[in-house]
Image 1 (cartoon, rainbow, N blue to C red):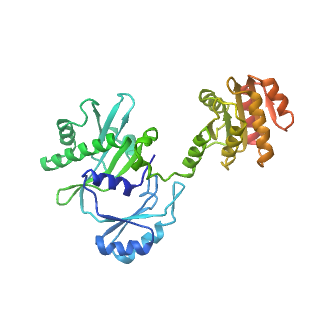
Image 2: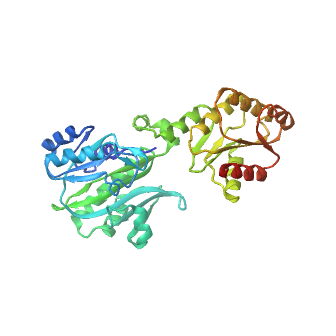
Image 3: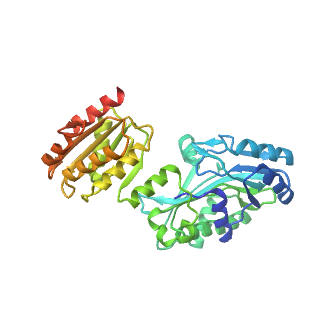
Length: 377
């Protein structure tokens, strides 16, 4: 789960990390009025759950009230990475002496939290890693010690050049780690962390992601969720007992079992196709699940063909076939459907499917090849 910059910085502030003064706005007039409280210059920043706002033109520095109004009018309604800007953050202007990057995330190799820091702040960390990997310092945090004082100071001494800044930085690192652990975060990032001209450290921007599996014990964090359209589909799928993740291909997949679903996507890729989703209908024999799964697949306008791959074990092939016929009767489906059934009651399922105009094949390779052929037709 992701949250907006303004929400992340509210959490930072609660834990004592210094942030800029700022006001959340929804109209150009509100941004203009914010200049009276915050002064000038002012940063007008798009609030969308994606990166790259600056490169997309979603962050502007206004030097007059009229300019702030005009920038707000330009940014509101802007499309950034497929997301529409509906709100803005008006933040006080800051005189910056130096920018840094600091972020906490999970390192799968060490099975620990890792703090990444760089003197190249204000740039996407992926770009820094690509162009100058030596500029990124990584510090694995021992889970037994946590962000102990001496650990925080060591990191700060590696990053900053003078003791007053080291002391401020160590304090911020300890608080970031505390936030990370107490909120079940998967990412806590300050980019840039700036030294102002009066030698104070300030979180100029903030980013936080959270472990979805821990949201049940984080009600305050969960209340901040603003799901995207794809996330809404994933939530709907979960409520229906399905597992769904949208991808960028054109072959919609309906499969029973996570392992078989992964294999199905692999074999489609192997033969040169592109799966449109991961969709596991699970192991229960429930025809309604097939209808719900079909609705999810059809909600993706990029899908050109549907491939159904069922291996009957707990899931009975005849129940899937009945569900598929029900879906065909209740939903307008104009796409070709390739079906492979194997296992428990496969013979009965294939007999049921004779009532519909479907492409029925005997193995996964044939199913993938046929689906790819139909997708290109």
